[in-house]
Image (cartoon, rainbow, N blue to C red; front, side, top):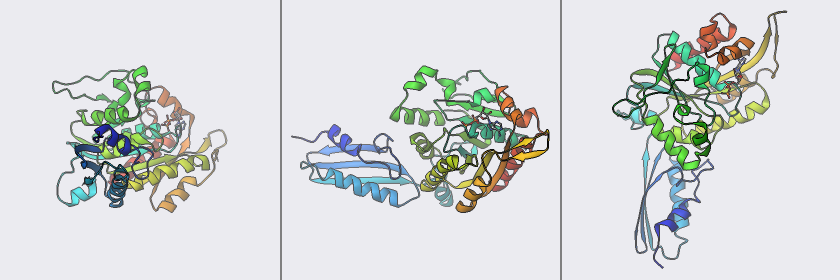
Length: 347
Ligand code: ADP
């Protein structure tokens, strides 16, 4: 029986992108399949600086296709695009850089609830306060919180070129993947559809000129994070964690993920490091002490800050005004501003 494209696709679905649980078909990396009797011509495109990744994909694809008795030859072309640094070194503009944006930074966490969005929102405000043109994009389709933290329920408009215009609040340009989806549509978006939506979304926002775009990633180290890394050239990533071991276990996974895809790690931010009791002036390390510092040292990256657990921080977010703007004198606000300043120095 003659070979069918479907047959090939089914086989290629068994090949996972190295280090991830998702396969190369669902990531949209296989761009062309041509069949001429038993001769196969396949083109795969990936963005990585790790030479082992194309090598491993090459071996696995060839091995799996040669198992089909109908296949006589496999001509496999793997095109590798360099991520930001190497392309910049080569003197060109990387294809996955967004025009007008100088730096894109991802704020990630292994676990939900550690304060990643709070950190992202306050850093955006801190950077804006220090005179930078800043954008903040909430990439969590399933649980967007940036809109809530900035007290915005506006829906963005598209311009005449069908590009979506961000909303501006407190000097920060805001966009959320959740702005364009109602809850029901978000709930049914799965697998490759999420990938496609994420890619289209990131390419179709009219950010204008920005010094820094902060991407508030969804928690975890799954497919959507890899999609983002493959879609835009990140200048670096920051991992947010709380000090206790259960959070650190997942933070380590996030650190490993960025290393694997060659995104520079700019540092760790430890949140909820201690509770400061204003009644007696004592610090209580509710979730333990020193976890963020140990992890940063182990990875030879900076610990950018240790932010206290403060009731006002939570209240500020719930009231739609990040704490840095609502009460700049609070310890957390000072910490967020100091981290913003360190970030500018690092970049
Ligand atoms: P994540 O993005 O990691 O899921 P969020 O930023 O949504 O976490 O924070 C979870 C909850 O904890 C929110 O209610 C937020 O206001 C609160 N929170 C985060 N950081 C602090 C802090 N340092 N002090 C007090 N509350 C905080």
